[in-house]
Length: 97
Image (cartoon, rainbow, N blue to C red):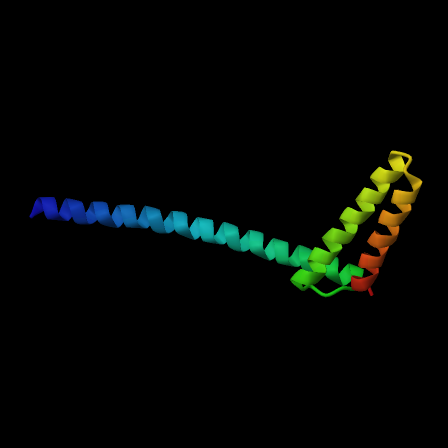
């Protein structure tokens, strides 16, 4: 009878520890998700674009094209720099209002 009480207590203690860890991790991930969502909303509102996944991907592609233009200009490749710059600005003009 005494042994059954010990194992019941041990199970409750282990369950409480697991529940505490899960609650902490859930709160942390919820905090990170809200922070990421607020960041995307603020970025989209400032740029005047939608918060859809396609718009975010187009923003990333446009910024990568502008980065390629800067790299081309640094290598003294004027023609490729202009091509990358025009493509980057063209993609960014689609999403920014």
